[in-house]
Amino acid sequence: MGDSLLDTVIKIYHIHLAAGRDSVVSVFKSRMNKLHTTRSWEFLGLNPLCGNNQGPVTSSAPDVIGGVIDGGSWPESESFSDTGSGAVPIKFKGECVAGENFTSDNCNRYL
Image (tube, rainbow, N blue to C red; front, side, top):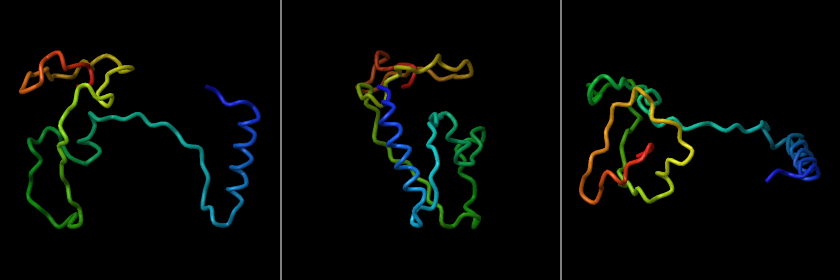
């Protein structure tokens, strides 16, 4: 649902009020970002073509801890819905693999 003109004017007024306060550092318009889960390697600064990326531990980032929390996959969860997803990328080389309590019926364009 769109905002009414009055709602929009009130929001703009409050934004200007907030921006004028000494305690407010900055005010800027938010933007929607699209999630790219297939680019996690790039985000982490890793090379996806180098196996498991378990190189020697160096002192270049001694305060960085990397870890994975595996919460499992629940295909029935809305988090794994492929509604609104585009076509599977041509470069994708994965396949749906059945496992314990997971059949090919659980696969979609997202999972």
